[in-house]
Amino acid sequence: MKRTRSAQLFEQSQRLIPGGVNSPVRAFKAVGGQPLFIAKGRGAKIWDADGNAYLDYVLSWGPMILGHAHPQVIRAIRAAATKGTSYGAPTGLEVRLAGMIRKAFPSMELTRLVSSGTEAAMSAIRLARGFTGRDKILKFDGCYHGHADSLLVKAGSGLATLGVPDSPGVPADLAKHTLTAPYNDLSAVRKIFDQHGREIAGLIVEPVAANMGVVPPKDFFLQGLRDITRQYDSLLIFDEVITGFRVAFGGAQERLGVIPDLTCLGKIIGGGLPVGAYGGKREIMERIAPLGPVYQAGTLSGNPLAVTAGIETLKLLSRPGVYRKLEERSEHLSNGLTDAAKKAGVAVFGSRFASLMTLFFTDRIVTDFASAKTSDTKGYAKFFTAMLDAGIYLAPSQFEAAFLSTAHTDADIEKTIKAAYAAVRKM
Ligand SMILES: *Cc1c(COP(=O)(O)O)cnc(C)c1O
Image 1 (cartoon, rainbow, N blue to C red):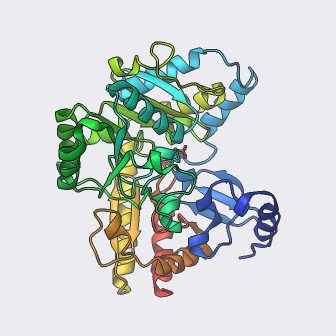
Image 2 (cartoon, protein in one colour; image 1 turned 180 degrees about the horizontal axis):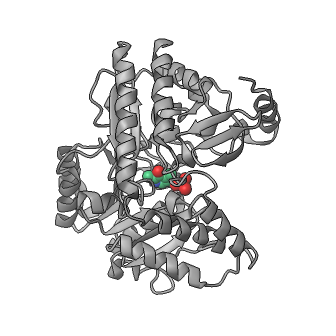
């Protein structure tokens, strides 16, 4: 496979952009450091700048649940663009998207649209602090909630890959207000609340963790968090930026039956354009400006193109059978990849929740960030490279999810499993 054009572009981009990329994980540092530059996508496939085709299991890190360039979404964006791209004034489109969100997530009585998941989580934390009058928050090791200062403490994703426990530039005075616990460890959470409960504004959690690789919650973990936060009048914040409209139309809260006070959304609700949202109980959301004193704003918030892409995406996802089919194909893929490794004598733990999955190269059962980190990342890099050479584009890090779209066919999945049988033999 010739990749000279990608290599040239990477040369040039490194002279202009830090590390040649606009988001660190794209640099492929954990898998050899030679990123692909993408020229186009259609359905389940992407093409690089040299014209090579790949089956895409990154899907822009989740948003492209319908695959790339879905004709109905593109048509709607085109039509919207002819009417202007931003007004800095409210539109009927925003009312429509907020209504669709409210219907899918009844706990989001009021919703504020923003432009990224980072902004959603950052704003939800500010609101929790403003509402409770408390400063501390609790998050879990390996959970990622975007790169706001308070949340860049023991975050997963790009940080896990680079092994940076938190970031220079985050004031120690701020980071000290962020308490952390291991994912799935209720007794650790209880201990922290016993000590600091009355100072904790809110607890933020990925209800299904997907930024340390996929780590589902244990039975009763989320319910336990609900009970503890209620006991101490702290807010429970579900970061459903990945899981919202992914693990079910109504997200993890619908599927697992635990209802938070605030919810963060992003990724899918923008249909591949920049959108985020946060929302929750009316009495809490009424503290946001202009109704209340907690400030949060955005020039491009509720952007008409992004909101249009979101509306069309949600319309298509609300058709009957969509999630059942995704689930079946995901199960087939996850089992196929796990079997491929096991039959080659490679130790793996196949972790999956709905259409999110990670093949951890470890002999341990992965339940938290510490166990995820027992994975053989060098082995993953070999597997990744062999798959890429076979035309399969996986996440360039062990600590990320593989995503499935409605555009992936059974034949695509068969092809992927077949490639995996060959790839594990090269490890
Ligand atoms: C991607 C992600 C974010 C950040 O969203 P951006 O749009 O990248 O700012 C926050 N939380 C979770 C759970 C995410 O997966």
